[in-house]
Image (cartoon, rainbow, N blue to C red; front, side, top):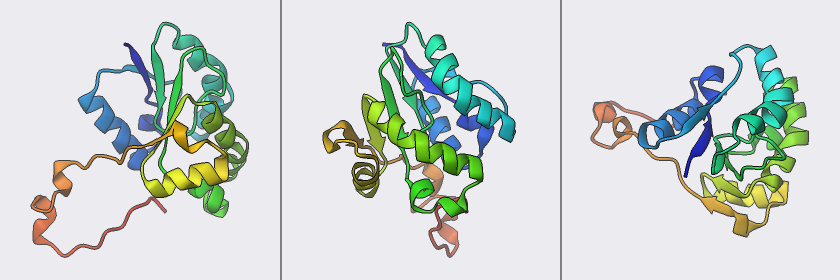
Length: 169
């Protein structure tokens, strides 16, 4: 089965979502789907045009579409799988830019409910998806993110004193 992967996060960020996409690409054979650049205008254009119209047309003939974020089409002839890392944008909207707040409030619940399957990266996120987005629990699979060897207990950082800090804020 040919699986399409939205690789747009690779041009938008170098943070966690891009790391997730790079990890998926390193271990799986995907049809890479992306459009636009890294500027804010490109993000808005992707949200308004690429996800609802352009990408579903590009995806014809694929068996499934995987979106590593909740930016995805609401309607698609190809089954959609969406990964949700967290719902901070809904819980703490003030920490996000105005476009992301507005887009997320309108689109995220619709995208999650329209997806054939939703991947949550933790049980906590699964509970948030059920509570905040109204997605039935039986359509959500918990699949924790993998860990690169550099983060292993005996990896390169084993010699230092570290505290875990996760996030981009």
